[in-house]
Length: 342
Image 1 (spheres, rainbow, N blue to C red):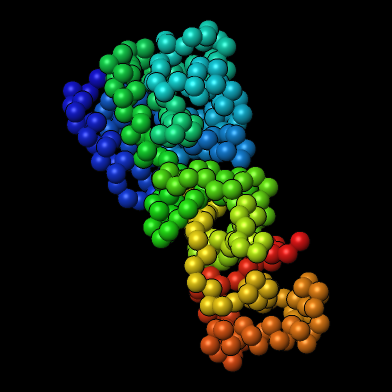
Image 2 (image 1 turned 45 degrees about the vertical axis):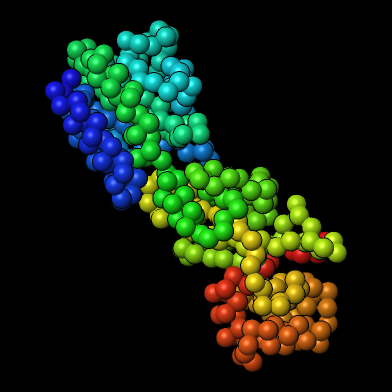
C-alpha cells in the first residue's frame, strides 16, 4: 500500500469537495487511488436508473469485449451476486462469498485478460441509494493488500459524494427560495430524490407535471418556472391551490440520464390573474392559435378576447407580446397539460 495513507485520504476529500463535472472528479480520483492500489485497469460507473445498467464515468485498461460487457446487464447481475448492492464495503476477489467461477465478469472476462486480483466497492448516497460501482484490477495477487482494501472501504462514502450525479442539481435546487420539495427528473421520466429537499406529491409516478416539465427543457433550455394545480390541497371555496414549479435543466454531460431538477414552492403573488387567465397565458406561450385556445376552454372567441384583455390589464400593458414576456419571466402561467378544471 502507498506510504502516504493520510495524503491519499486528504486528496480524495479535496477532489470530492471540488467543483467541476462528475466525470472530471472521477478522472481526478484515479491518481490518489493508484497510489493506494497499483491497478492496471479501472472502472468507475454510475447506475442508470432508467435502464438498470452501468454508465461509465472513467474506464481504462480493458479490451473492447470487456468494455461492452461492463456496460451490459451481466455486470449488474454480478455486482448483486457479490453483495455490492447491499453492503457498504470494499471487497477483493479473494473475499467473494461465492465461487469465483460463478462471477461471469471475473471468470469470463477479467481472468482471461490477465488480471489476477482486484477490489470493488458499491457507492451509496447518504440515504442509501445505490449510485454506482468502483473497480480497480491488478495483474498480481499481491495487490490490493488487506490494508488498502480497508482504507478504500473507509473512503467510499467520500468517493460516492464526489460521483453523486444529483449533487450539482441539488445545490441549484436548494438555492430556490421557499422550496417545499423537489426531485431530479431522468430522461425516461422517473424522479430521483434531491439531497436536502423532501419528496412532493406533485412529483409522484404518473404525474402530468413530469411530462410538462420535460417539455420545458426539451430544446436545451436551462430554466423555466410556471404554476401547477396541486390536487392534494384545496383552497377556500373548494378551489385548487397552485404551486410554483421551477425547472433547472441538467448539463448535457455524463451521466446522460438526468434531465432536470424540479423544485416545488408556494405560488406567490399572481397579480390578480384568475385560474383561467393563467391557463390562457400558458396556451399563448405554447403558441396555440386563438381558435384552439377557445375550443380547449369551451368559450367563444369573444369570451376569449375578454380574457386576453383582462390579462393585458393585469400585466400592465396593451401589447400581447410584452404581456407574454412578463408572464414567462415571472412564471405566471399554467402550461397546457396542467388543466385547472375537470
